Image (cartoon, rainbow, N blue to C red; front, side, top):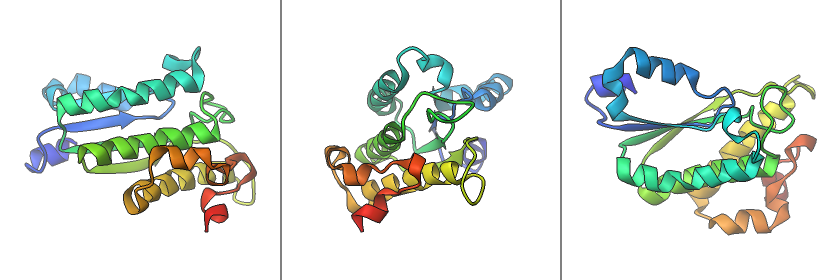
Length: 182
């Protein structure tokens, strides 16, 4: 974000931080460089905030982004799509596979609906298993990509993805939604 500001390519950036580790790196930067704070909306979705409500509270907070982003009017959204909030992750543990898909899809829909460009990075994820040793994490990151594809390439409405269970997929078993949909 700071580089984009320095280059004059952006005036305001929203960072949607959905990593289980609370966005402490971004928070530290904003504390050390306070001149960045008015130009950055940092929305944090770490595990500590949702321990009691779990996925329900997490997804409800995602919905609140619409108003926050509409008021802030960022030029760009940087989305940290953490895999570690998955219920089976040893360091996360609040969202099911379907809820992670809902989270990702809704973030993409909000950005698209508001006309704000979005870049995302794949973050976190400490589950182990499968042939590669990290198959569960790869499956979660692939699901994020699939949800971006649905929103940006196919423009499917929110409800259609989760009313048809063939699209939801069970990431714990390594099944991807695109396998059943294609």
